[in-house]
Image: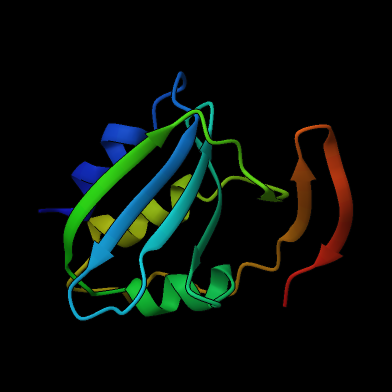
Amino acid sequence: MELLSIFKKFFIATRTGQLLIKFEGAPYLCKVHIERGKALYISMGNKNPEETIAYITGRRPVEANFIDGVPPLKKLNKPLNNTLLKLAGDEGENAGISTQLNYEVSAYDAHGPLSSQSEE
């Protein structure tokens, strides 16, 4: 299973939901929150987006599932698509990938934004 093909399959403008990826040797699922094809948040266990990206870099996915219609409860101020696609395309050689996102995180519920805080 290739990470690039997983991302390309679900980063489609009409898709909203949660992409769950099991990585080899990982104790937790990686959760990618997608809204209209844009990856707006990523987490794994209690790791923040930067830590999650650093952790999955170079790891092999063994399974992926998508739950349609699950809206993101947290959103970064810009999509992660380019970062994740670059990571997936350079799995063996990740010199060009930065895990320093410096994005702002906003929390959401069914009625809209809850609060805003900086993710470090």
